[in-house]
Length: 96
Length: 477
Image (tube, rainbow over all chains, first blue to last red):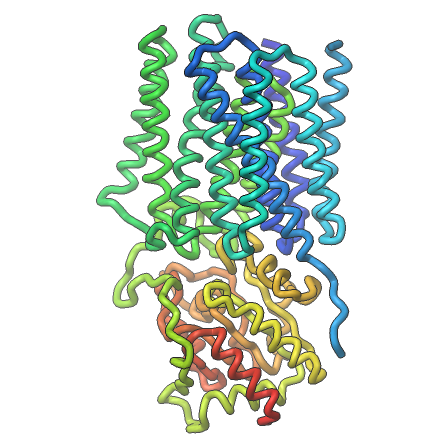
């Protein structure tokens, strides 16, 4: 039970800290922000590989593989696309 | 591994990724922030691999390589206008992972006694994950134009949603009480029901409300991940999921405020009201050359709209450009930026006014204009630029309607009443380069078009702006 309480505490603290950190981010960067948090939400990759930490049946393996593929797709795609977007935000020297 | 050591490692990883997020305050540092967050997730992944024994390492490696390769290829290939569809699709992929993990853990829980709270989290992860998956796929299909953009309203839509939610709760309760093999089938039924729920929920939202839907799905994807983390008792998953849920909630809140409608009102969708039918911006753009200037009949000046617009642009000292999603659809942003640069080279002060809901996801317009090489310091938020419109000589509206509709300020009972808008009507001259005279997504007529100081140039925005540019270059002042 203590373990669960700690997890709920982690949830509450992360939500609150995240809330304060993120509400200060300028709207200018809201699209890259969502794209990055989208990649972060694919930390389910951890859960997906953990499926493989015990002996598995065929169907479980299949589900595990699907979960890993989807989560890595999300994680890698999310970070790469965010990086591409952020590269576009530049200060430019203007023609006079 | 020692418990304290692993706790320390988890804390370091969380600090790394929160640090990454906090670098998003400034565009210059945001790239480093993104890399830090990516580093944090990689470190978390490595930590999990090192801490646990694994079956079938080869399968894991192949699956990771497949997912990573596909993710990388797709991320390289999409262009900036496809970003909302891509992000929605990725929310969906995350949703699949979340409900599959919850499913496997819950089927295992049948044989291993687990705590009720953990199990409830598993159910929430499963339901939210599956609904996020289907809801995001619908959103992505709409955003990518594979599905009809118009909101679909079933008869008794809200009742359907409520009924589905109740059935899901009921089935979940029965599942908790039953053992295998019934449990497995019930869980599969639960996934199916949640997928239907996601679809029914999403088809009702369309057009200009998409930024809210996508933000909301961002939050549910995060929540699903956090619940997954609780059932597998992984602190990092919980922390990351909760942060994402916070981020999605903030964005949802900001978007709702920007259209002055509560979340429930948005999710109920816009109801057709009276004469003006809800229209969205998705009309086929007319063929090139079909552009025509249409000075409204009531206007005193019989002067041709284009020469009036060109003269106004030539004489203006302060210009504000107001881009909308119509500009993006017409792929006119590059032409618009060319025009802005031309005006700047003539010594004028040119800036862009960005409404929070311009585009199809929060901040989308900024990305589109950044891609077209606009200095990000020229992209000004609504609250900062609104007081300045009174001193502005020319407000150039390109593909925007509802966000510059003065009816939002003085009308009552319309879908946009009370919605904060850009004060284009306060500028000395307004030039509107929209596809047609039809109202925006809200279906509310825009009185701005009928004002004496307004020049309306209807037609494909790209061609219109090009013609304006040509007029300026020819020195037709």
